Amino acid sequence: MELDFGLIDGQTPLDEEEKEGLLIGTITTRKELDEFEQLNIEQALRWIIGKKFKTEEILSEGFIKRLHRRMYGSVWGWAGEFRRSNKNIGVDRFEIPIVLRSLLDDCRYWIQHQIYLPDELAIRFKHRLVEIHCFANGNGRHSRLMADIIIEHVFNLPIYSWGSQLDLSKSGKVRNLYIEAIKMADAGDLAPLIKFARQ
Image 1 (cartoon, rainbow, N blue to C red):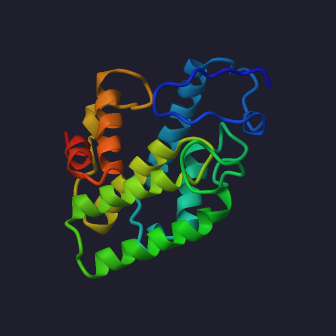
Image 2: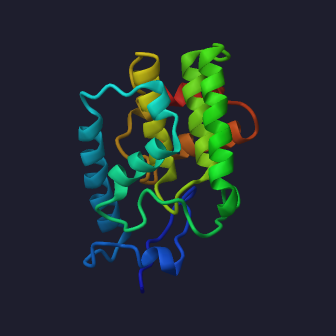
C-alpha cells in the first residue's frame, strides 16, 4: 500500500503488512488517519463512561487487548492483536505476552502492598506499558487511557489532563513537553511525567 503517514518525534513507523490492515480505503494522509482514529477513540471513551471495572479485570491481558480494539478496531484490522513485527521501540514481539504478564503481576502487587502512591503507580504502569509496545500503533494513547482507567477505577481519583491537550499525537509545545517527560522517565525519573499528567 502506498501510504506515507509522515511521522513526528516519538511515533513508530508501520510496516507494509500493518498498513494493509487499514480498514478505511479512502485514508491517504496522516491528518485523515488521525481524524478517523480520534473518532474511534471517542467511541471507546463512550464505552468506558458509566462502567465500573474491577481491578482484576483491568489488570488482564484480555482487557489490555479489548481496550485497544475498542480504540482502533474501526480503523485497523489488527487492533487488539499484539504486534507481529519488531520496532525501534519495545520488547521483542515474541516476548510481549511474558513481559506484559510480569507488568500486570507487578501492578497487582503494588496495589495490594501500597508500594506507590496512586499517581506514581498509574504513571509507572503507563510508562512500562508503552515501553513494552504491545501493538503496532496507538501505544501512547492506549497507555494513557489505561492510566486514566487505573486512577479512576482502582483509586477513585480524577483522570489525568495530560497537559490539557486533547490529542498528544499532534506536534507542538505540549507534545514536546510530553516526549521530554517520557525520556526522563526512561532515565528513571518519573516525576516530570507525573507532573505533566496532572497539568
